[in-house]
Amino acid sequence: MSETDTKKNFWTTGGMSFRLRLVLGILFLVVLALVWAVNEGAPVEIIFILPVLVMSYLLPTFLALGRRHKALPAIFALNLFLGWSLLGWVAALVWSLTNPKPSEPVVINQAAGSMADELAKLADLRDKGILTEEEFQAKKAALLG
Image 1: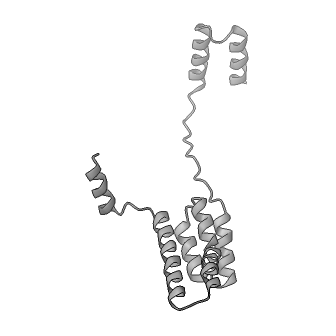
Image 2: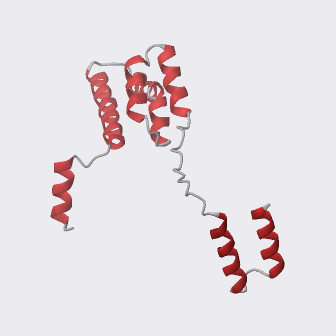
Image 3: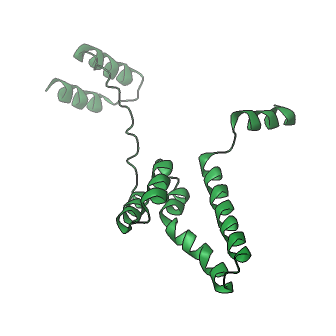
């Protein structure tokens, strides 16, 4: 793929992931709030405190972002809209710290061959020298008994 194809693909498919958009959006809001605070003549302390407050408020979102949580958009929404209540913030924090259950591997049970097939396989292994006669007899007894 050429460089122009990559650029075209990025802009036409919205190549930025949700994570990148989220971080850029938060940075934009912090800068916007700082510009507003400076223009309003806010004390210098607020310029340093404001980013800390924003980062503290969005701590559950940043934890979910760092942990690559599958429910990041939902955690962000909960944090943004209900984080002002202590219960919403704690719920988002707990959710961001949970490990989502990994998808279970699919186990396909293959029908076991008949006993005659198993015995034939064991006999073949014995004939090839992979199994000794004693091992063959033991496995045959276990299979039959």
